[in-house]
Length: 227
Ligand code: C5P
Image (cartoon, rainbow, N blue to C red; front, side, top):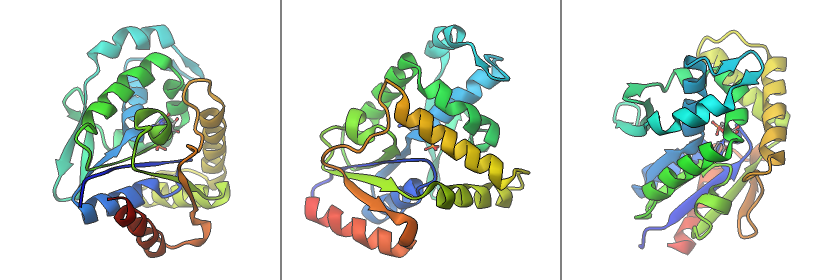
């Protein structure tokens, strides 16, 4: 079978990463979580003091972009790659609700997107890749052989994210998580630069009513048709 590029886009907590990881493992492909890259930039901005309550100092962030080095390193115990920011493993730090609350503001900045898209295209140049995000099928790999657009209701998605955060020991309320999900949906679909939209040739999967196995089998069939 020839190696292809698989682009998975959709709102937050639609199960994109679960599906992408399953596919990468089954096919022996590389999995890239592009949300982790935007999250790492948001975390960097917090560390540097560029984010204060509701304000983001865009100019300072843009100036320091060239000093930010992002890498994925495969962790064989976990079975997936973890995010490194300037040599430091930040996998835990980028998954907090604080980072989630700011990441979409950081992701609106054209200079941030240009930097990350370039790195993503480089990572995918040899195909054999599953990448998930918001603009993978539209901007990063418009020629991807297989494009999936995942959806699920905001309630379903907030419940998933809430369960994840509680399991990690974060003290959040369901309302707070739902509000964050809805806010990010809004910003991600309304920004002028690379908004989240379904690519014309993407296959839409609403997984509100599909379990993991059903969804996996469905997409695996699509991969077989394309490769
Ligand atoms: O996928 P995840 O929810 O971790 O992504 C976090 C945020 O990063 C999204 O809400 C979005 O604002 C941004 N993002 C993006 N483009 C991508 C991936 C993520 O703008 N390709």
